[in-house]
Length: 381
Image (tube, rainbow, N blue to C red; front, side, top):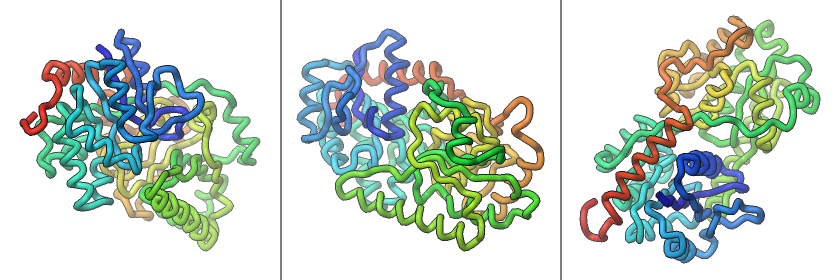
């Protein structure tokens, strides 16, 4: 088959772009041809990028005409396309090719955007022959929108990390961490990720437990474009609030903010961490959780969205917005010495997130969409 991906794509610093890049490579390894129309053009984009949505969907239609795909796979989330979201939704209303749409953040987007968000997802969902979501919670959201009949749950994969360009020791030296026990909060800084709850939890730990512990916030605020810069500004304000809160509670010296983490440093940070902390207040799914699984690093996580599915039954799974429960889980993990010996992420009931298995399940969705042909406007799909 010939698959055309419509998505953010490297070198853009975007989690969905990274997801698409890894998935496309795995699909190609199964003998299929791939091409990409990126959300935005970037110098140095890989050769499979054949267009970008800088000037609207004209480039998308041109790519369909040139590449002649069997299926287009749209990696959809409002932050992924920003100001181009409506244009992509319009194209989906009358595509020239069968469409699969992965809805990465349906629960978060509809909760944030309310009525307009629900209307947007109904429009996008009804346009695609097949829909993919990563969690049962996302499927429940589609059910509430009347879109469950065409959706398939395909879990977010655990992918091998990029080649390391440094060691854990290098990072410890650069950030003056010494031999501290590290709790890793990895990924974009976002208001929904609960860093303020983590600060409050740290502040309640007894001095004997807190001694020698550092929280590494390894990431930066996601850059956004157009009117969505308001959300970027909100996240910058959230980061400032977290720093003020840590100063007020006397734990600012326990936090290290690294800024953007290059791919080559990911393995070293997970290698250095005693545990990964995901104090999220809402979440569709988490690529960070799957990275932790791939590295075998213990995870302390809230039970929101897909995290509740992934860490069901874990002794370190806690309710969202409960700093006291989060503190108890941190204290328990540190007391058990989870970083010693064989590592276990705590994902007791994790789905099969092997990259090859996810690629094969996704290819099966492509085949089903291809066999049905393009959606005819005005007719139910």
